[in-house]
Amino acid sequence: MDWSLAILVLGFVILMIANVPVAFCIGSATLLAIWTADADLPALALVAQKMATGINKFALLAIPFFVLSGLLMGRGGVARRLIDCANVLVGPFRGGLAHVNVITCMLFGSISGSAAAAVSSIGGFMVPVMARSGYHRDFSASVTITAATTGLLIPPSNVMIVYSLATGGVVSIAAIFVAGVLPGILVGLGLMLVAGVISIRRDYGTGDRVSLRVALARIIRAIPALLLIVIILGGILGGIFTATEASAIAVVYSLLLSVGVYREVKLRELPELLVQCGVITSVVMLLVGTSMAMSWIVAYQNLPQNISAALLGVTDNKYVILLIINLLLLAVGTVMDMTPAVLIFTPIFLPVVTKLGMDPIHFGIVLIMNLCIGVCTPPVGTCLFLGCGIAETTVSKIILHLLPFFAAMVAVLMLTTYLPWLALFLPGVFDLR
Image (cartoon, rainbow, N blue to C red; front, top):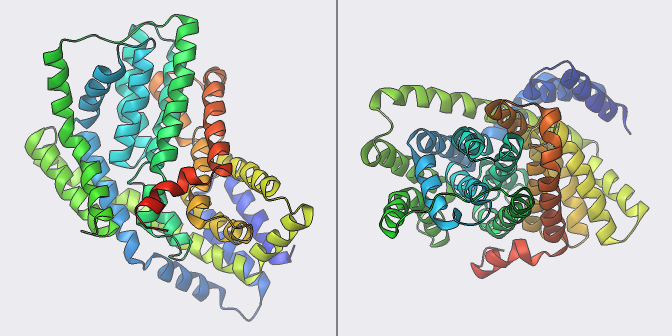
């Protein structure tokens, strides 16, 4: 390995261990690597230039809009209405509340585009309810933590927008959005299967049974929230608007729904939500900018070509190489947040998998699925620590309860890796490949 790449990796690891924010770890390590790569390179100017050009992308405008839409939906009483709707559909089955938890996380995650928001909104309500109904608190938290990640696969998803950017426009946002629907549903079904088996073994009860009139009323109350998914996907696939325009429409619809229809958000609360949106967006943009600078030095030192040659030197078996890449990405997901991981490792591994004949859309879904598992695992799993806080438990207590759900997520990951049509079927149907 070139000295500059060694310094890049070593500097990044040391700064991470020192608990420096990830964006500053990436930026500082990149600056050191450029200094050592070539003394004639203007390191400071180069990093600044790459950061500026990295965030100067029209597609990135979708991120603050989808973030704001998710905040409005999260504050607007959507979670409770989705829970009531899901309880009508699957509550009467054995382990019904666990199934309600999974489906609600899938629906809410697809509306908000945030796994952390799903854990907070759904877990804050469902974990206490499940505990009162006799479910083990750690089991309830495990269901919420893992199910919340489905919202990162089912559009709209900010991390999918970042992946489209990281591919240099090779993969459109519309294509990666549609590709995630089927794998996301399969992950949810896998988690429901595990939850159902555990519920039968532990004799967990069912949810509330309600009259037909009440059931219809609950479903009708949830329809306006669910229409957001239809509007976004339908508009994009129908060619009515682009993904970026869809994000702006999502904000308008969420505002009308939360303020005008559900009346859960007051006008005086909007400045606070706008500030939250600004903070979240600034963090994402700083990560995007510094990661773009890191991607430049990685490409400058031919790291993707070297890794490709190394992997192909180990074996020419496509399935073994894909297994190795999955294992590496699973390891990366445990120590790195999704956004920088997507930005850093897409340009490294994408050339490798394309040489093997893997479609970039397919690889994007596999990459995101790997990193979804990472947000549920220590030491930096955002969803894991949020879920532990909500359930008032610890990582050491909850980890054994999480293992069966991890197994289900890994099983679906392997299926998606080796059965490309799971990710490519819908993009093919809508002619997005």
